Amino acid sequence: MTRSFCDFHCHLVPGVDDGSRTLEESLHSIDRMLSAGVTRVITTPHFPASRVEHHGFRTYMAFVDGRWNSIREAVGRDYPDLDFRRGLEVRLDTPSPDLSDPRLRLGGSDFVLVEWPGFMAPPDGAERLARLVDAGHRPIVAHPERYGGIDEDLEALRAWKEAGAFLQGNYGSLAGQNGTRARRLIFRMLEAGLLDYFSSDFHGRPEYVFYLHRGARELTRRGGGGHLDLLGKVNPARLFEGKPPLKVPPLVVEAPVMRMLQGFLE
Image (tube, rainbow, N blue to C red; front, side, top):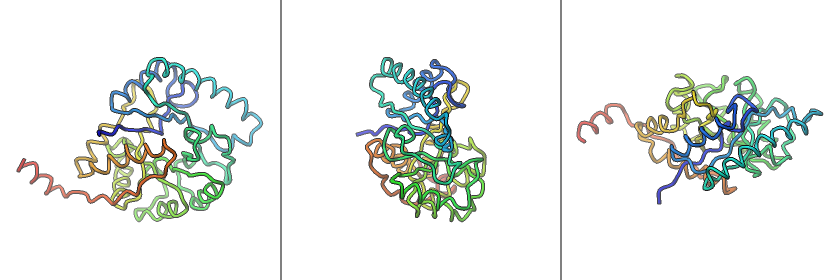
């Protein structure tokens, strides 16, 4: 059976962050994702964890709820076969956030998508993630290849995983969307067997590229077709089912000379 892609990191709720601005843009973006082979989506607006402690939290979430309901109803009408759920990309701008509200997590599960403020990995990142795990959550760190403060030895990422977190890379980083450093780091993570998932981080506007196929081609070109299946289809599908990811083996990148010889023989 051919598996389909599942995407749990994208910004499609209209008018709440730097993703889709209108309902029309959201639906256009969903159409593009379905055309690329995505059949299950959790959309994740940006959200600072410190807002939970603010007196305006309920008002803000009521605003997000209204925008979510507008896209949910439209998707149900226009794309009835799409498994479409909500979550948030939670910015960990407070040491011990309260994530008890199910709307803060992915599809109401105990998985929570988190990002670091200022695109900088904090020195106490492992401790912060461990506190989330102790609170009963399963944190997934979004796009670790994009953070400053990550050394080439990837020790910080190993510490995050030892604390109980999972790691989600972006398809765009495979294809160079986020620069040469992010591209180099994401392949180092693959070679070290540290990544658990791929998602798009698609910001849902017509002028933006949806990088799934570009990233998939680059990974396959480097001998990672099986990793694409595991990271982009199998493990994200398990998340939708509330299950932890399967372990992903290290990627053995094919040498350029070997790829050239294979192409010649073919």
